[in-house]
Amino acid sequence: MRQSWKGAALAALIVACALAPAAHAAGAAPKKSASTHPARIALHQFSGVVTAIDKSSLTVEKQGRSPRTMQFARDENTASKGEIEKQSHVTVYYRDQDGRPTAQRVVVRGSGDRTQQ
Image 1: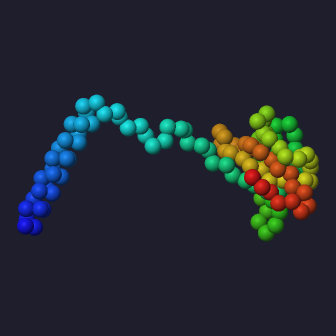
Image 2: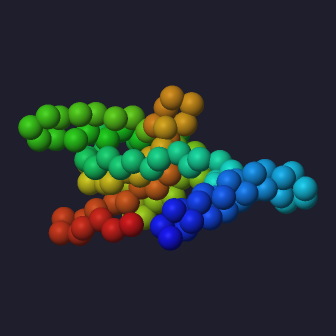
Image 3: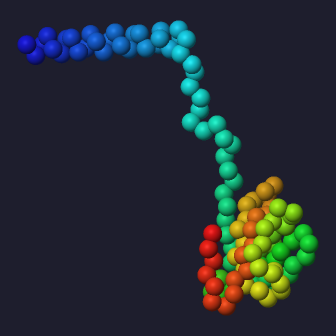
């Protein structure tokens, strides 16, 4: 009894595998890739104190145990929440575009504010 059940299951599997490519070629629509949208560039963030600002760039210095300074490009698409001034505490949300960090959004933090996205 077991042998006939296994034989029938094996025969059904072979037939299904043999017919699957024929059904696909007979008019089934080709599958599209899982993602049709281009990959988004990752959004990073950097917090610190503004040390320099002009129309096209923003320089922010992170203080502490391992200080670091970053300069961000700014353009007409850069959004800001609050007034960006020298010595203000900010969080910069940026993307690397053409090998250069470009600010997408700048959030000015008050003395007790916490940043939120």
